[in-house]
Length: 288
Length: 293
Image (cartoon, rainbow over all chains, first blue to last red; front, side, top):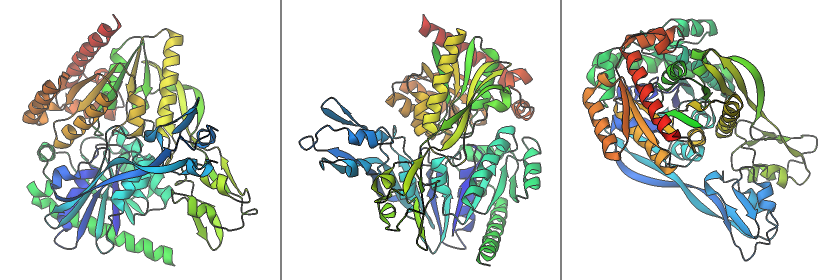
């Protein structure tokens, strides 16, 4: 089963929920954590996995054979991403703009374009105790995150619980992380920003047709509008974590809530039970 | 003209709260919200939209099923998994389609067309704190970088028209496509961090990005007193990197109250966070002013 933790707004506590849920469940089942926030991966800072595998990820970009090129310019006209252009009698490529669609190799009438691999980042895999932990790290300056996110998700094992930590926002990297999930947890905070961005995130998971619920972090540091919104929309709120300077200090130091405050263990196990129940309910509803 | 961009790497460190306060403190400026994906600055500045513009991102493929002969060529060539075959009916999933046009080009019976796709809106607005350019990317849409470029261009034009010398921009989290579009050629990037392992780690990544694009950087530490030791370490790191720490903001419950009331901190409160922000702004302003002279 794949459960993704997303948020809309950044800094609401996605990584807190992902890591604590993983730690709370590790004694009951095999759990795999995939950090798909490849721009700013943070899960490894809290779980400290021992890395035993590093895999470079690349996408195919054009490689032009100047001896075959007749400067017709069809590649540049075709490319939707401005990644290749004919200027005078030279073909210039911009690999950082390329999405790797392969279109230029198809439209080139003289067979002058083949493809080479262009590195965009690295996927790290390892273990933290019983947990399998993997994360992607995009190379600084590379704009295209989704192919690296896909590469992290390819490590998904079927016979365990996979927890995915998604990037903030609602655009293409988030969709890449959230799609194909069985359930999505949306983490928010009770502020106007939290509410606004939660609404956007709800729009996204609804569009993808994934069952979801909300977790409210720092629930005592704001107002009740988020809860009211969830009530009106019939969105279940599965967990509330109050603001506490002690919890903030735990987080700041790179430790997990349930490591310092084991009384929170049960809350995360209950969170999992609620998720599992809802996934089964959803599966039942869609198969009927 | 000077462009100040506020970024952080990690989300939720306080970018928008700071920008809103700068908006209240600065004179003669245009405000720009470059976080087009989850735009929040408008919640504090309450701009009135004067001009609403449509944003067309990448085109999307559409298959005409009357013409389609079910040859499956499009499905084989699409590298984005955007074409699905359900009982011999080929369809495009617009969420996965990146608009490359390979399927349109390759279809032997011209059954596929690339159609323009309304991906969002951008606005020119008036606020109590000055003119503002902002946007909203549609849900699950791509091309946030392109929309950021549109917002920045419009902000520059607006500043020129109105004879304003400064643009203050709220940036997106992360270090990817929309951050790169927000950052290229700005006068100064302010990185807002917090004294946590994640805040620090993500700050380092976004500083690397700024260096990659030769953008001058300065740092401010928000809620610095939640972990004095880590704040100290961040300051030492910045010193080593030759980066100025332009100020530190203490944790202040008044901030949450100001936000709950949807007001910039320096407008709603006179507490210790507001005081620190005022001092940060005067430091930043001096630095930007120096650049102009």
